[in-house]
Image 1 (cartoon, rainbow, N blue to C red):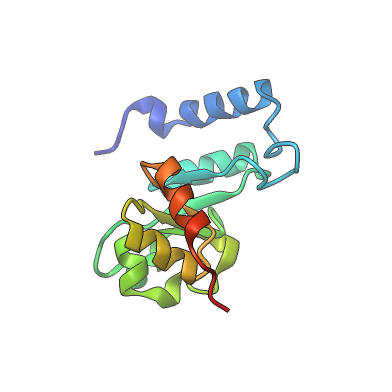
Image 2: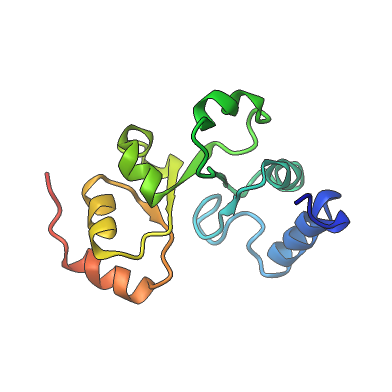
Length: 146
């Protein structure tokens, strides 16, 4: 699917940037770049268009679940997103992609307790979940390992 013309010609990214300016979040929030706002997308074109409008907002390129992604990543535009996003399944299958990456890695969608605990034990700081209240309770109750 190529998306609508508005999705491909930059209108979506321009509208998002206008909304961030209107909300006073165009630089990422009160703490500056990366404090409150991050742009995440599976579409590297959208990330590139938004980067041209507002390079202050950190961008995360979400990796699809395709087998040969490492071989294909050379065809992606350089520098559109300094951070990578992996599914929780991919993170557990290839932990070297996320362990020790700190703020450069985002994991989606961690809904199960064992996945949340695995991410916590391995130092993953950014994770998406459909149940933030439950995830917070799991993480707050977890014991950090040295």
